[in-house]
Length: 108
Image 1 (cartoon, helix red, strand yellow):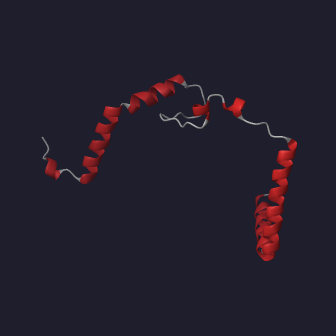
Image 2 (spheres, rainbow, N blue to C red; image 1 turned 90 degrees about the vertical axis):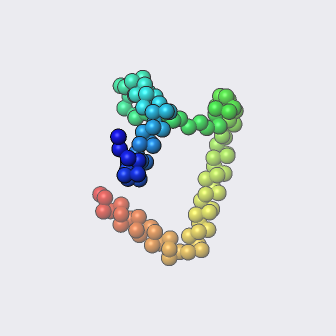
């Protein structure tokens, strides 16, 4: 048997991680998830994220449909914001446009 004092911290950490993994059983969960979705092209994850839909039920029924005036108003707001930033710093805006144009030209 190996003396615990002679084991390096890296080996001790690896042993702790392996013990945690065995206790949680995540390897089996991942294997099962892979088997269930085998022909799919996207990889699977053991964990899943939840959004507000999980708390409210069907999220589509609770959403308000956007009207064209709402969308136009938000676009007008964005355009006014961009125009204001260009007017504040015209040289910086011109430099950004020149850099984007140069990059675009290099990729074509």
